Amino acid sequence: MKRVKVSNNVIRRLPRYLRKLDELKASGVGRISSFNLGQQLGLTPSQIRQDFSCFGEFGQQGYGYNVKYLYEEIAKILGLHKQHNLILIGAGHLGQALANYVNFERRGFVLKGIFDIDTAIHGQKIRGIEIRPMEEIESFMRDHAIDIAVLTIPKAEAVKIADELVSFGIKAIWNFAHVDLDVPEDTVVENVHLSESLMRLSYNLANSSVTD
Amino acid sequence: MKRVKVSNNVIRRLPRYLRKLDELKASGVGRISSFNLGQQLGLTPSQIRQDFSCFGEFGQQGYGYNVKYLYEEIAKILGLHKQHNLILIGAGHLGQALANYVNFERRGFVLKGIFDIDTAIHGQKIRGIEIRPMEEIESFMRDHAIDIAVLTIPKAEAVKIADELVSFGIKAIWNFAHVDLDVPEDTVVENVHLSESLMRLSYNLANSSVTD
DNA sequence: TAGATTGTTAATCGATTAACAATC
DNA sequence: TAGATTGTTAATCGATTAACAATC
Image 1 (tube, rainbow over the protein chains, first blue to last red):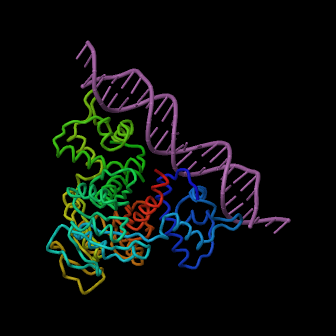
Image 2: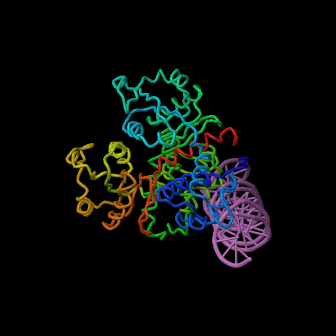
Image 3: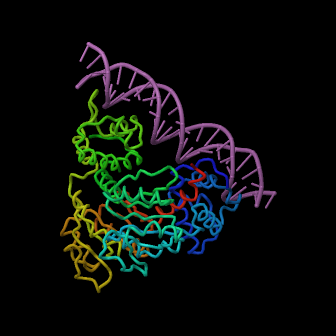
């Protein structure tokens, strides 16, 4: 399990592998070759074998890959065998939507607390989880071994709150605010910039006739 | 404005350029060099100039780029100067959150209709926009010149609905369902797979101490 | 065994970076 | 004018694809 460097492109493909393997597993497929998997994902067999070889040897010559085994190994590589404790910061529409989404829990991402600046909603609950004042973040993080903060607040506040979270020792931020956060090297930031996604869609729409 | 091929990496960076230029504009910066812009975005000046050169010549030797002009040109490249009419399919938590998000409107993405399978919520309104039965999608699309469908429904239904949308002549799908949609070449699909994003975060969390 | 398919090394392709003449 | 900085061509670096020996 010693790795040198894994490129971002590989990391971006890992969850897709996992999802496809999950589907295959569910439909009773026991084994699959890199050729076949490649066809289903629109990737070359070479690339798939190269990707996997970053992490170890999961296949068998003449046989291919055992779907269930490969699934579990990739889940491990992605760190999904461990539980992660989350807090949500910002109980607006998007925050509420994420808080209500139960499927994350099944992957080991457990929402422990919700925080908002609006005193009017403090004490309210989403899926049984109480909305608390921002001042309680620090102590709550300590008491509940929080790994990940989900940021669903306007960009104006996001930078300041991110700094605070870092000072409280947060390890990772799932950032839905439309800003680039400036955090220390060892703090993980995963951005979900919906507006950028929509712009890419717009670009492809404007150029779909040209490009194809 | 004739282009050969623009790589996905370039397209992914365009919205970031736009956002940064928007910020610069707002803070009164009138001009900027590729060197300076690169510093602020963590990119090399070379890359920035290469990226822009895919689309034309927007700078001036010895001066740099006019922020306002460059902003407008990139907005045009991204197709943001045109209005896009959207329908939202699936008025669950996430769908509601997106429907409530007004900032898309400012970029020319106008939500015209909302559709859901649940008869109990038909007739209800979100931001003044009525929730309608799925059967009305086809005629509504015709009547309102809809470009883009936002899919916020469970993956089981997403594939079927996507096929229908294609047959109704949809041009682009903003897909939040956790499936890969199989659509014709000239239909644009932009995926927002939140669970994959969270898995990448998890990967980086598991490997942050190793990699850094 | 023979056929299939891996893991890996080598070859190719594409994207990023460096360099520099052009010119504001 | 001299200094700055572009747009672009060339060099480098990295990622994808192809090839193949190893082996189940």
